[in-house]
Length: 483
Ligand code: MSP
Image (cartoon, rainbow, N blue to C red; front, side, top):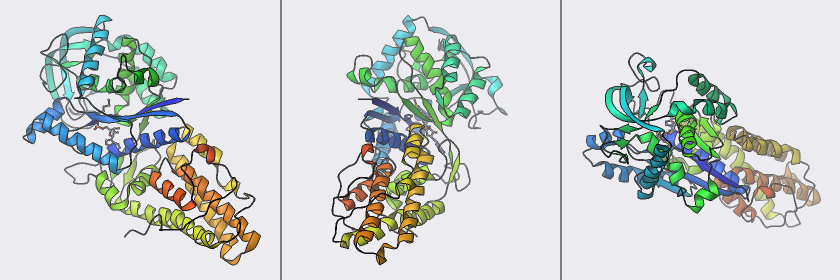
């Protein structure tokens, strides 16, 4: 049996989850569900990144201990993922004991390799991004990534010999580590410059894992966080590690590709471990045309969206509204338009129309699958394999539109006997097959369709026209109009 190990970034718990976190997680969930549909052995990991100065500061501002804050906010992520029907296999927290001991063990390996040395860090730090910045990278004195203020630091630190792995990393990226290509090119051009060794400890941050060779330092939060992908599998001895490592895909937003495609592989090379197969970057959401921010008050809460519109509708919107690799805009009015114009008017109505007639039909539903060509099965599968979820979903809906057109043309309400049996067969089978492909995107909608059609949970091998033998039941609408 093939295995598939997919991860999301682990999220900072200085605050509650928003649409950006939900987006990365929903994409990972769709991929995990797709691979399960293919009967693969899937391990889907998500979790929370709980150390570092940013959390320390957020806790102090809220008059809480860091531990109180991370416990509270980590739980909010779990709640959000439950609401959004996220089928993770494991939720890791970097404050978990097993993670902390794996980090120390890993550092020992890198130390024994001779890849860590003591020095002094002189430069800048962006606290919201938890990243080091050199003077030449500053843009108008601010962080080049997020434009916020940076701190000046001059501090004793331990360094990881990142520069030593530069050539191997360039090769790895040239060989296709990063999806899509534009993000690979961006990293490659950054690698044309100097690659400096990485400061991996902070003396001035106390909310972190103690550096095992000098407890007056704590481990840099990114060095700690990246290791979650190993510790979650109970590295070094766990059976999960043996079964699932290396990761098949690390899913990340475009701003953290560098950490996953440069720093992370270098860490693994140093420890002599196999490298992940892919790092996939996705684009960012703006909200109502503007950058999302607390001060603008336009932060989209995924829990609220799921409660208001259903998990499936929100998941559908996230994947349908913009190409996965591009940036896009969220607005509640376009979410409503898609629910009314597509989920209700296309999908829900098609199912209701066909089932209303099929429910009353007495004879045997059989036919000749003349509409097989309308569902572009091969293309849908190819897009899933390329991880182009946006195109896969578009094609599924294109198919649903075509089936609607077919029903309009055939006017089954005027037909009877064999002719009617044939139109019903075609439409029901087309709906059933579409529901197989919809399953990773809208799991509970697909399940409702299966129930209406009287069939059991389906897998990819069911996406073929065959004899229709069950009794159907129209039941309630899949989607209703929202105002
Ligand atoms: N803790 C690090 C990741 C460590 S992984 C070893 C981190 N956490 S985060 O809380 O900032 O979440 C990052 C994820 O949220 C990224 O995948 C990022 O792209 C996503 N998003 C945050 N804001 C976003 C948007 N406005 N739009 C889309 N996704 C964005 O980074």
